[in-house]
Image (cartoon, rainbow over all chains, first blue to last red; front, side, top):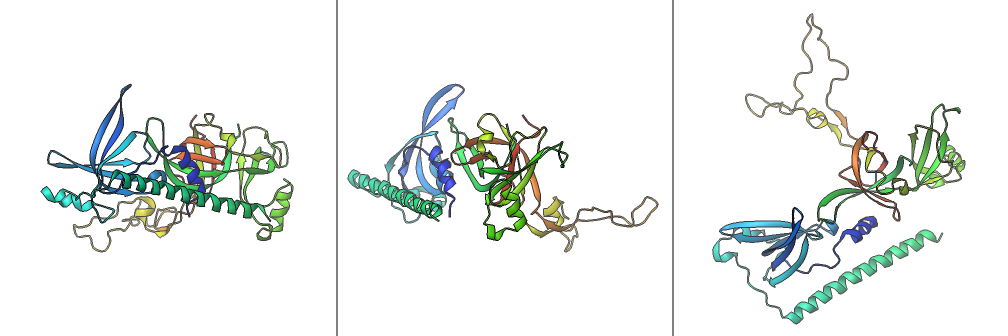
Length: 153
Length: 217
């Protein structure tokens, strides 16, 4: 089991609002770039092909084509450099790691679109946050129970 | 400022600063430690030191001497007991508690971590001492990982025997190990937590001593 002290550190360093996107989504990531003492925003657009790790160590990979060259960037989910993520398009995918896209050429690179209505998307997001809230509540409850067990002789 | 504390390695993760720079950190649950004994230069011991204890141990798993020793500090027996040498007379009394606030943020920037490295079992010279081994080809047969020559034969110049302390294969790891001058990234007094940049010796759950770095301010 993960030591609860990891959660203490995570709570302090994680981003305030969860990022919502799925594997196969075409996303636009807005990044904060610091050059000298100037700051500007830069977008990176591509397909999410992988999401791995957990807690503060969670990373995701975005792939795009620049010219004819595939480019992948790997981002930490909790990086403060990521200002926002917008999903432009959802792909219809059947696995959680889309590394096979690297070997595809031409039209085969494209993922079929999974059309979801704005309403369904909202519902899904809600369900996700409800689920994470429920998990958090369950964790708190079990931690409290453990505390109680430890304090009552 | 008190220079040292005992704790337990929790594991590694990463944290971000305001600029988004990522730092790998090891979490150490440190203290509260109890002063089990105060040694004095002008007393029977002849030097100044504090003996610290960390992590309660059930009395029925402890020996009577351990229980009796802890009772003098009005506390229970501890799993991890270590002594810290001091430059001058101790500021702490027997039975005093030492927490991570001793490392209050900003005051200590660099720390040394003393622990017991992970045991690796019986290992050859390449893993144990970083020997280069022998070539993969050029006629080398079945000796690719051997340490090579361990001495020449007898001449007027000595030799003819293997010198004491010659580095060879053997039990590796599981020994006291100190890592010096690691950056202390953050202190969480509420949760008795130290965040130390980079790795530290030992497995998760292993006991460590964290002290103010001896060689770096």
